[in-house]
Image (tube, rainbow, N blue to C red):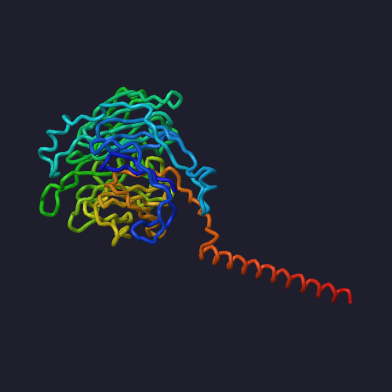
Length: 445
């Protein structure tokens, strides 16, 4: 596997090449094949979001409000001279070099959110930053950018000239915890996204085709007061879409979107715009309302934006994180299915993602990058990075073939096993020919 990790402490990227079962926490465990630091710019300029444009181009959104266009060049880790001079056989894999070929500044604005956080439940001052950097649906060169302060930007990438350009900058109500694009209708050129944040209830917005303006098309409504007749606070932290409702009572004259949300106060909300502005279900996930911070979907068919290609809420599972150390998987009814790394993770997770519905990537304050297998829920990779982790990008997930050392006991054991298997195969073939010869002789008699 080849991974790119954003390190908070020094604002760098680390490229890691490793195989399954790598574990740096065990001295005798399998170690990474390659770890190298790139593009360090310091704590105030760490990479908040990464987006793969093509195998040779990535976008980096940094905490200083800049977006960089970075070119990737790959070369073999070991050349012929290295192999010739090495006493041991060397594995064959590629490593990368990174070059910033263009940069745009000014995507964030702290002045837009200073007044909002005076009354915030967050105890520390929050600076503006990126919440989304992703490709526009059905586009290869246009990208959607959203910030905590409610700024919505559209940028274009010209791969021929290696240039970035800003197409438009718009505004929505702040603050934002997320801005989720809808990409489930391949036959429509409508650009719709949902957003929300602290005391900023979920809203659906449509962008004009030329990105010149946007309009709000739907706004959620808060649930009724709790059993003590207290207002339920609003703080969605993540949203994912499902396919439109297609039941017998569907009204073709009404807006038709379905989505789920996770809230800071550990609720799982299920929404259907045809049903109304309030959620159809609002489920308590944790008994003591422990704060939750993220949302990822697990389903067999998920789009590039992480939305589920199903209209049935019962089909999906969700993964979320709290502010302590837990990474939890729930089913559609809010039943806890498992905790990833239950006895292993010791700090809050800054990042989780589901890669190709095969792996769960996790990193955060304890400075370890972990990868879990979604079928077994078991950890398959654990690597100490040496810095708090902000985000992770999978460049490829192929295993690197490790050649055997001819002088090692493992190699000798492997060869003995192969020799036994070969001998067994030859013996079976001889028995088969003997039986055929005997049968042939009997038939001649």
